[in-house]
Length: 320
Image (tube, rainbow, N blue to C red; front, side):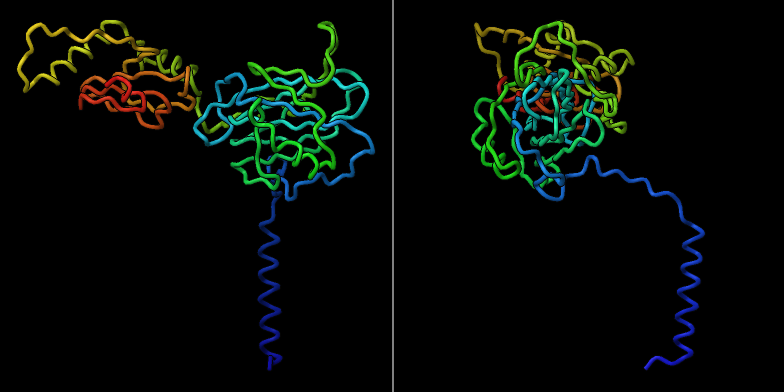
């Protein structure tokens, strides 16, 4: 049984805590615009008649920045929507982290977007308040995840029926980071977009430059220099010497031909590898003796290290 004294002490303690808390109150900054939706549905009711149009590709054209912690540079897809007859719901999907920059023709009414992918997706160009469901693999969104290319279409209609109550009317495949969604239009047609949310606003300010832009910046700063044919020959000669250090020479044997070095750099100082060193943006890094090996994710790149006379990276196996 609680005594009157204990009850009084509890009231006094609660009053003291409340007073201390009130003195330390301040504005709490919070935005839910980039969070995954709690449910796989729009909160506002849909109109009686609308069209569902889908678009996407594996990834758009490269940018020089990152929008997530995937280790991939962001890509960008510019999408123009033209639908003069019905309001439009967009289904957008890319595998790579992608900023979708949306524009539209006069008379087009974009009433909602379902955007998805493996890595983070972001939507720019639409007015604030446009309903957006952002459901990706990385954010564990309520709609699961999808991305769109010619071989990734099977799950679109079931998901569209689940969310919108109807199937996709048409799919448009983006190419090189651009796509027209809906009816064709003349080149001189006026196009609109909103400045409420810009593509640049999604740049991860904590991350540096990515891909080729980061390598060019490192060259300007004297951290890297572009490798020459002489650098390649010197590495090949050093490898030959290391391989034959304890083996007798073979009469008539040919010296191994110098292999080509795509996008090669010599590391001059400590260097953190940028994001986006994949595919055509991969590079070869030659590390002289006494210079630290670059840190970070190699992606599809490789390191030729004079300190160990080792090649590191997935493509090294192809040279053996």
